[in-house]
Length: 332
Image (spheres, rainbow, N blue to C red):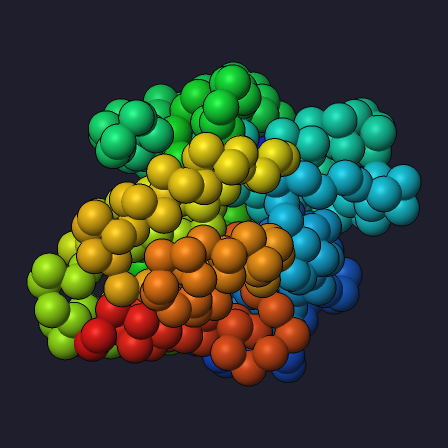
């Protein structure tokens, strides 16, 4: 019965966001008679959001293991079986999980409905030296459609826009609202729990956004320049007032050439960028080489994946750690 209900909400949720967020009330005493709602998520950041909203009423299976690069992830045969048991799958979309469509086909025709959290949201499209804003229009008729994705020579681009929307906390709030509304449709008996958890979590995210903005105010304006490992931070930069100078890894599937590395070092020196920022799922040695040649420091931050460390074992802690380390690296 739940799965039949779900396909109605998928169509609605994919077109527009709704309103609410999560906090921490598990509501375990309100679990439905059918047991926990089985939910699959593609990346651990989304899994954490679902757990915050769902509490003890949901059981979350995350496809991409924490600390793994989602861009190069290859699903295992066991993932098809696990995803076929889910009542709903939450993906980000915008080409981030371009392997998901094949996995859903492997799971069979009776597989779960898919909610694409980025659908209908305003996106930033990668350009040569910046980002232009473009609206992603909903595809209402095909809820399994995966966003168009392309790779171009010398770079790795997403045709529908940069997928890392959640690194702007206001976008994460919209994700939480969509998660809440989907869970209510799948499990109406848990509506009160999902709404309560969502309200608490949204309040926590509001506090998080304020914390980030407060830390940014302590960074000298001339130092608010970012060189990150890969192209994950345009939404963060636009929301919180940073200039994106460049990225170390233009293509997640290929390391930069010696010429590209030398050009990046020169750019760091000319623009007097105080630090470069790496991520745990990538080759730290490459960032350290560039930092050594440019005579700047290296700091580790997080984007696509949570890790088994208190610094980034939840979305909120990940974002707090990111701004703390960015502020330290840039002289805040």
